[in-house]
Length: 179
Image (cartoon, rainbow, N blue to C red; front, top):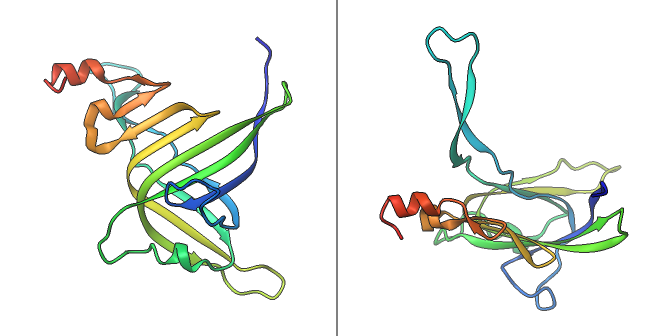
């Protein structure tokens, strides 16, 4: 199998899980989709000469961050809405496979709450940017070329985790009587 390099060369973000043709395109400078980090616990047995970090089979809390050009009242209004509901944020992008010289669509949908809005300092020689942070992520989906890569649904428990469309905790859910 040949080595290849995949790079994202374009991205857009939409408030809501809307069809991009119906949604306002927001001027995005950068986006960082959720980092997937498994919690670990250090273990060192009696008489051992070194420790080991054991995977705990749970993920660290997810978050989404992005930077927009200028001010965006539509996005700013999502900060601590009156009913504190979570909102879907949809990121669409283009990933280039440099070996095959093809374009691959990427789509991430994050359901969470806007918890941070940070405008940049005003400067005559720089543009105004705004940083945003989404936490309290209850759902996260990532698709590559419309094929599901990751799916996490906090409320669904062990059955709410799929990687490459496989329920990775199905046996655990069965052992807990959830299936």
